Length: 164
Image 1 (cartoon, rainbow, N blue to C red):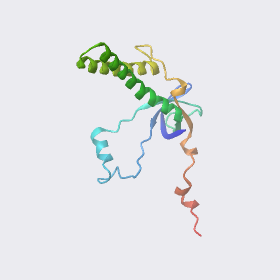
Image 2: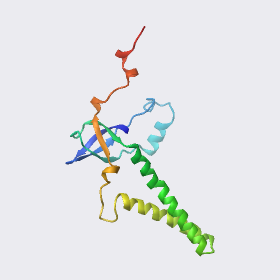
Image 3: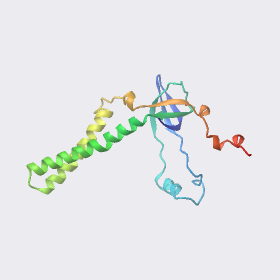
Image 4: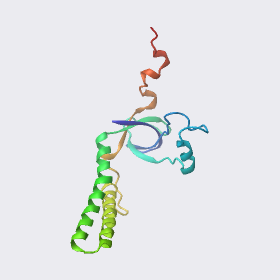
């Protein structure tokens, strides 16, 4: 299970809308020096996006929670987003190369195959036109617990240091 801290922004009957809490690894983003991630963030903006998650713990708006998603869901999403469009691109290019004797049409067919693959993935996961379907429960994250209940790292707790 992949876990991340998030804040509840909206609450519905059985699910909530969450926004990931942005955390940095080194803490230098607020200073003028560092790795450069802060500079890119200022130039391009760190937009936050909301996403839906199952609300098994009855979290309310404003609660800080731990949200999780299964690793197999991440792998299947990567399959849908990468393998399917590349496969449709290759099939379209091979068909165009077999049927037509012009490289321009092969490149055009490859681009169209890629776009069709992405359109199929979007339709498969979200739906087409005005008939939008929510992501299936398989692809939806779940609120696991409140962030206050999260187990902290034993090494980061100053009271747990053992000095022999």
